[in-house]
Image (cartoon, rainbow, N blue to C red; front, side, top):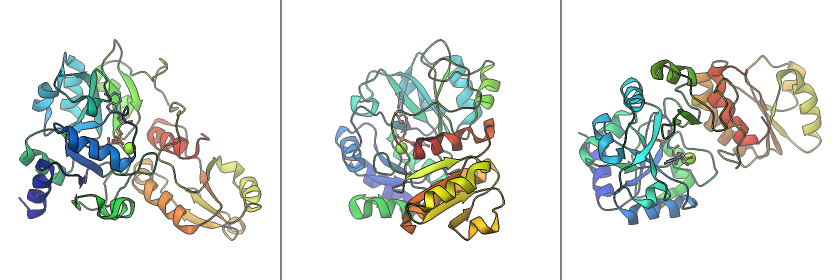
Length: 320
Ligand code: TXA
Ligand code: MG
């Protein structure tokens, strides 16, 4: 195994913080069994102590070390989607640190599908607590450079695994209650979960998960630039209004009218949801780098394939 992986493991064992590549986004990793290491992650992120961290484990066999009363559905989901972008919320083992779970009786668990993350987990031989490697409320990092821009040398080691393949955070599903509940949409869709579970998953408000993401209580995954989602047909009017405030940037995926293109800085985004997701956070960072007064985002279609992207856009703009 590579020197970089050995070094990452040594830093984790010593209670340090490692930026860890996963297939979704980069995580800010620490030994999930070391309260001081976990506290240092919260401190660096500026994250409220009540927000629990996901524990990354090497494989589904490690589930029993972290969770109890594991329902059959959880095991089926693990079998179907791990390693992969799915986090399961389960009843925790009593010894799981309160610092990790935010004092809750549950724990979030996932096996990431990135060769370097899996190599670190195999050698570390324990759970790795890792929130996304960004300051609280900001856009998640999808490259090692994003982590460097965010934290500089305050991270003990950055394990560079290249750009993240998926680009947005894992799907989170709670299996604590009678019905499975989708807490965060991601690359694993409600339909894919339902197929494995043999029944639909619900949204936190009790409705069936179909297309729309829940409204968010907090601005999250947000660029610094004020951002707004706009329906395709309303773009021209929105650009005219926004330009009165200053220079405008636009993320669009449908063909752009030439006269409109001359009035702003445009970034052509993929018209396919997975490709769009992979580029989304880099595009939000790009918009911030322009120093424009406003970022307009053409609203993607309202079908299930776009659920996770629309969820992140709603949190970035609080407007969907
Ligand atoms: O793709 C991902 O999930 C990335 C990579 C690094 O694995 N991680 C990530 O972590 O997005 P973070 O901390 O940025 O988001 C984790 C979310 C938080 O919103 C947290 O509230 C929720 O998971 N969570 C963790 N444990 C939970 C629990 N026991 N009950 C409810 N929500 C939980
Ligand atoms: Mg995060």
